[in-house]
Length: 146
Image (cartoon, rainbow, N blue to C red; front, top):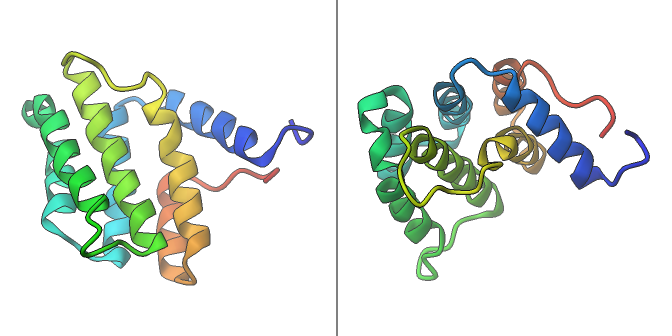
């Protein structure tokens, strides 16, 4: 696998990591919660965290996704690189909830495969050792061949 490009290796690692999860939406929410401990909170992030915790809220996935995406694209108050990755992680949580609820039309089938790689990129984009440690612990480690 080491002869594959880095992005492809990350993608394969993310797929394998995601496929091991018993409860993918809750797992993705726990990754977002680990990031939230160091990255700060916002109404959009809070909504994604609540969504992940409560299965009865999963049908609201697209609605919450739309709010997060609008914030991510706000040109009047642009996100830093780190916060753009953080919000991308929140978007993935909402996509997983939407798909798990059986809502139509579904988001990409591989949305969950990108949780690990997005968290990896977030950890690398910051110089916060506590964030790195929290994400490492939540994910169970990082890919070894990247």
